[in-house]
Structures are given as C-alpha cells and as structure tokens.
Amino acid sequence: MHKQTHRHVWKRIRDREAGKLRANHFANRIKSNRISQLQLSNHKDIVSPHKGAINSLQVDSTEGRYLLSAASDASVAVYDVQRPTVYEAGGGGGGGISKHSSIFVVDKQHQQGHKYAVSTAIWYPIDTGLFVTGSYDHHINVWDTNTTQVVVNFKMPGKVHRAAMSNLSTSHMLIAAATEDVQVRLCDIASGAFAHTLSGHRDGVMTVEWSNSSEWVLVTGGCDGAIRFWDIRRAGCFQVLDQSQTQLGRRPPILKRSMITKDSSTKLRAAQKKHANGSGSRQQPIGRVPSKGPMKQRLHTGMLSTQDRATAHYGAVTGLKATEDGMYLLSAGSDSRLRLWDVESSCNTLVNFETVRLQINKPLQLATTQDSALVFVPCMRSVKAFDMWSGNTYTILRGHYECVNSCWFNQHDQELYTGGNDRQILVWSPARSIADEMEGTAEDQDNWSS
Image (cartoon, rainbow, N blue to C red; front, side, top):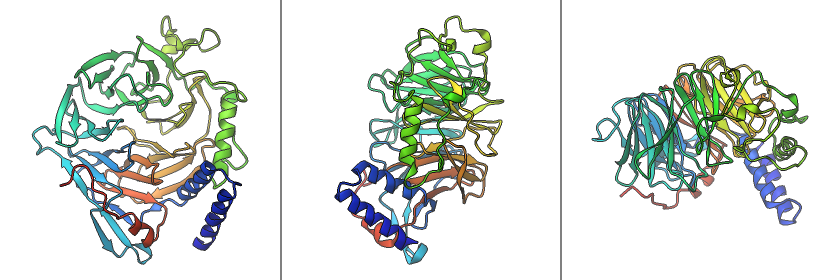
C-alpha cells in the first residue's frame, strides 16, 4: 500500500517538474491524499493537563504551531504541536512517539484565572502575543501570552458560550461574544469597553462566527433556533435564515464522485464556485443589501415579523462553520440536524447529511479542511467527517471514551485535533515513518519557554 502511494507521489513530482502539473494543483493533491488517510496518530501525543472536559481548541493562524485549549476545570493551556517536549520509543510501526506537554497552564490557582468552566479560548488573529478566554464566571479575559497576565477584562451579563475575532479585520479589534443573554456584545480590545450590542435573538446566544468574506459581517446562532447575519456598522440584523426557504437551483452541484478523492476535490470546488456564481458571473459581496429581488429579509428596517421570527433549526443552534470562501455556511442544531446554507441567497441547500446524533446542551466546535471539501462534526463519542456537498459520511473517527465537544483542523500539517468530556485531546493524522518525525525535531525554541 505504502509502495503504491510512494509511486504515485514520485509520478506527480515528475509531472510537476515536467510542467504537466501546476505547483498548487500538486500541493492540493498531496494534501487531499493525506486527509484521506487520517487516523488516530501513532506518532504524536498531546499530554492534557486538564481535569475537566475540553470545550475549545484552536491553533494559531500565523504559524500553525501553538494549540490553545480550554476546559471545564477553569483551566487554559498552550502546546507546541511542532516541537515535542520529549520523544519516547515504542510508537506504531516500531517508531517513536513525540509527547507534547503544555508550555504553560492558567487555572484557578492563577490570581487572574477564571473561577468556573472556560467555554472558549481563541488566539488574537494577528500574532500569538495575545489570547482571549470566555468563561461561565461571566467574564471575557484578554491575556498577554508572554506574561500570562490579563490585560483587558470584560464583565458579561451571563455565562459566556463562545467568543470570536475576525481573521480578516484591518479596521477593528472586536471580540464578538455569545452568552446566555439575548444580546450579542462586541468587546473592543483597543478601548477596553463594549463597542455596541446586537439585539434580535429571543433567547440566549449559543454560537458566533465571523464571515470569511467581510470583516464587518457577523453570524450568530441562538437557543431560539435562529441564525442571524449582522453588519456591525448598522443597527439590526440584515438576514435571518429560514429552514423552509429552499431553492434547488442554489444547491451545490453533486458530481458523479462527490466524495473527496485524490483528484476530485479541485474539480469539485471549481464546479461548485462556477455554479454558485451563476456560470462564472461575479459574486455579490456579502453584506450588501440588494436593491431588488426576492430577498426582502436582508432589510432589517420594516422586516416582516414572520421573516424576523424564522428559524434555521427546531431547537438551539449549537454550531456554525463558514466555508473558506464565505459562500456557504454549515449549521448544527439540538434537533440533531446539519444544514448547509447558500449565504448569498439565504437558502437551505437541502444537502441531506446522513444521520447524526448531536449533543443538545452545549456549543459544538465544527472544523473543515482547507478546501472545505470535508467537515468534521462531533457526534457524541465519535467524530464524523462528511462530504460537504453531498452529505455522505466520509469516515468516522473513534477514540474518545466520552462525548466530543470540539474539533480543530490544522491546515499546516493536515492534522485534526479533538477534545472531549474524557479530558483528552486526541491527534488524528496520516501515518508517518520514524524518519519523517525525526526530521521535525530540530531545535526551534518557542517564545515563552526559558
């Protein structure tokens, strides 16, 4: 099997050198091939210091190196996923296992630590000098990574479920906070105060996600079953998703082999984008209110009460994940449904995701591959990987002993990290040889260890 894979790789390298295969196409094929081989890692182990459920995971977007985790025992930890703490013999296939212990932990013993469960932890998008935590103790803290001291603190009106910052932002430093209060609050790191609040949900807000196509557009999911889109420069939401508003013409095209393969994912993305843009026509920027057409619900002023009360799920919206290009949005609900939405038309695409059983009482952290071909969904004690455009189950990852809460896909290494109620952080990666792993153990000091 490995010999056959290596032959394919060398053939592609020769094709690339001969100019038969473009460099980016070559890289995408290699990544797709690696993703198709994901399994519980036999060479990397993250040593969790947490004594409670893992609620949140995130790798920094600048280096793809530092993993941030948050847990129900009020602790937060950071790990270097590239440089192991120790290297132990006896891994799978006669190789070794790299052990990655936490670089530092902030817990209840810390003078400024949270008192109750930490539900969310995110990196400042620009660099790893700051990170943000949100807790059931009603506080959002902004931490200096180098000193592990709180530099800004926000007192919230209730338990914090999720916090998010925009990766696109060049004009603001806002943290969007989803709490058990009906209002979404925007916390400004620059001023240390609330920028403003977003009113519209009729129950607590469970999850929040920034658009991948505009730094001004925010998406929220509530316990009222609603998914709302906001332009934070204006009052009121401009879009409410309605599960009954469907349009088969807006559905992503399902190719004959829609499941991710070594060759199909690039064609699928190209076909999907062309179809969604109307055979190559220019995509309308998300956030612009159309002057005409059937989408009146984008206009918050005078929005019909029936439109304003539309629901995306029967029950709470527990998870949101936008595709890389921002054109589609995947949602998970306490009704154990996954739905894929066309953002530009506000339509439910009616992609039929195969049967899932989801947790109903807490937010779920979904993850996608870089090309958005696969989505990873915590499904009780397992993680299911679905083909985004067909809804078919691609693979099921089993390894946790209790419910899984969070997934994070590391695009730099094509690794998946998952955290659950069993207090463990598991690594899912393509099988690697001992030689490959030893290549990555060169001296490369992190910024915070002495």
